[in-house]
Image (cartoon, rainbow, N blue to C red):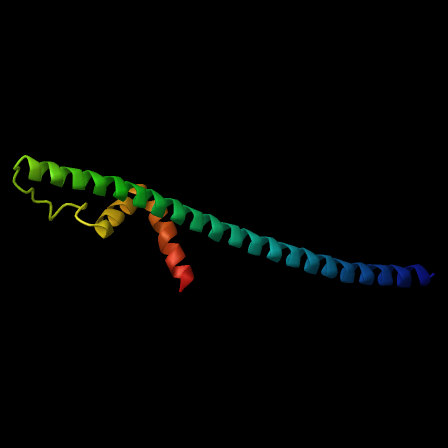
Length: 119
């Protein structure tokens, strides 16, 4: 009569160890998945940074070419020099800062996060 009770206890005890093992496996699978997702997020953030830098560089090249043509036109037609010292397009660094600010807060936060992760 005590045999089913003892067998039931051992069955319950073995199931408890099985659940702990399954939970440990699930934990490690989830940890690997989280790591993979973190890597893909960082890769996507780097892609966004590359797109922003490329777009900014191309826009600066177009603007620099226009600026050169305008300076040549002004010199050819004796137009007085324009004062552009306070404008954001006076050099490439201020142009890049303005371009990043115009891309939006999300891109700015992504670039800031990438700088923090690289340190």
